[in-house]
Image (cartoon, rainbow, N blue to C red; front, side, top):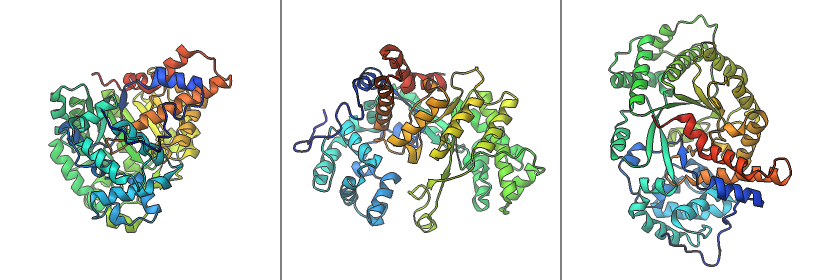
Length: 476
């Protein structure tokens, strides 16, 4: 059993954390808390799951790769040496412990203490004074088998994890893991962004060579590119893949272009700079063709929209991408999203779709757009996905839930995901579930919903688990 070091400062996170009234408490404890987790989008490393890795210390599992924490530390004036630099793991943890008390009202403060409680049984609020004790205690626990990657997932009642995988990946870790026969399912998610990244002429050719090798198809034309992508989709499907994912500023819709796709492709692989029109048209047509392939396989397609990435060129040059220098973008979403979805729907080739929005001003845009393409064939066929990235906090979650409730059907929602690289991030599902139950509980207390525990409890259980289990259909 985890050992608590709480003495003078008991946790502010009680069993009724975030639950304002008796109705919210009943819904959470009776219908949400015990539901299994389907984490259908994350960035966990498949090899670490397959090999059941045990991490050396709390820094390597908790701070490495976590750009949320890195941004907070930089804001406090902490040197990069203690973030991504050469400082020791203890020194990095000590600096994070110093930072934590300053993160109040940022979701990091809640996440940090939920994670310390749920995984390690630590109820103290982390600070510089108790940093060494907590560092040593967590490190000693991490060396036991129950704190291996699979053990940590089991501890959180995770039934399915979907990693994010490039079409060129050999998926060997997924195949090896499937042979282990554990109760956990690990599924690959097809992320083909690099296959249509023709805006990067210096790297596109080398990527196409990798895709050619992976598919055993010589890619010399645009048709060859589509054949190679179809080949990899078939392979992913054989290994258990049932969904794709795409990270885009916005979707593309260029139906009237007179440009030639093969000409654009050959220019791209010869490292020629393309015009904005050529880039947009190529991405549009390739995503449409991919969408048709997904539909044919019965997959779910996911679109993460709205991130303005790599804003700080000095830091990008020094540290690379995904290091904490991205932000919310203010891209126009409605027209292209409508045209893109409609283009696939016209021929009844629109796959089940999840659309994630990063700009809260577009919540209603996305919610209304999803409703345009539900056709009665599948419950919740077009999903307004959970609050994402910078919106993955209490206010952001409430706004997404309210927008979906007001414009669509929250009862059809497939719920939460971690979108994380950390094996300690799964209490985010608990965070979401508490917020969800509190909103329903508040409405009951206000007389805006009936006090029908059984029915509303069913809706809560569906959002937390049942809807995702049905929607993604990982049983096949």
